[in-house]
Length: 95
Image (cartoon, rainbow, N blue to C red; front, top):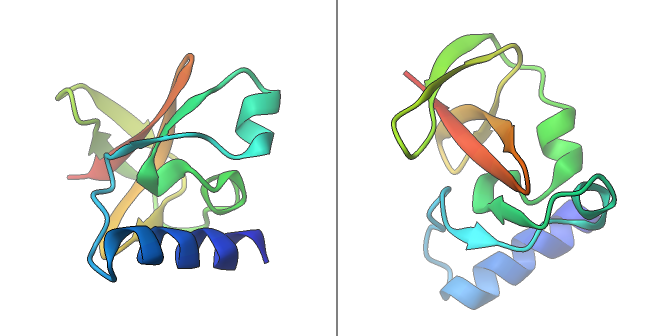
């Protein structure tokens, strides 16, 4: 239910347009409870990020650094995983 509400909120705020996976937003309560307060848009919903089941990949975060994703998910057609860079959660895109 929370992910549906988030999707509707993001859609309403963006006028139905695609949301940049790297847009900086507030984190959901589960991330906040674990010390994170800034999330990139693809990683705002911790349930989606932590429940990822896609294939592993080498990925790049927005700054150009690489990380290994053990499980991935898709956000608006872009596949990747979330990477912790306290106090931020970043979306790493599969290469």
